[in-house]
Length: 122
Image 1 (cartoon, rainbow, N blue to C red):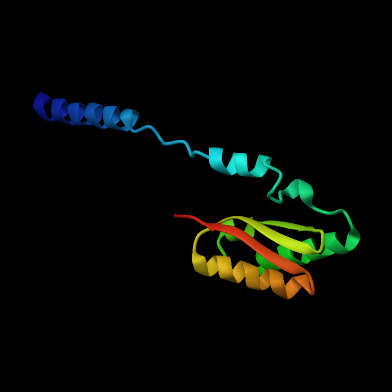
Image 2 (cartoon, rainbow, N blue to C red):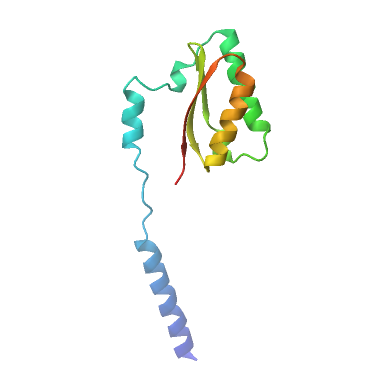
């Protein structure tokens, strides 16, 4: 009877050791962070406080949240309205989502230009 217990205990110890050695890889956002600090890229800090720009951003956010076909990532895309344009930034799960988010934004942006800077996750 001791042999099966010893075998199970040994397997458990090896499994725990294997899990302990399996360290998660931290994402490397260095390139994205450098791009955002360059001043050439719109970030959420660039959002205009003009009431009409805030309304456009609000309408686009609502359209994204109301679309049940979009992933959580797509619903969390940054929407920045300023200087006569809407900039979309952030990751989505697929190329189809990228297109859909842009389409929804264009429907709500009226005459404002929509700049799609969305990244597709690999």
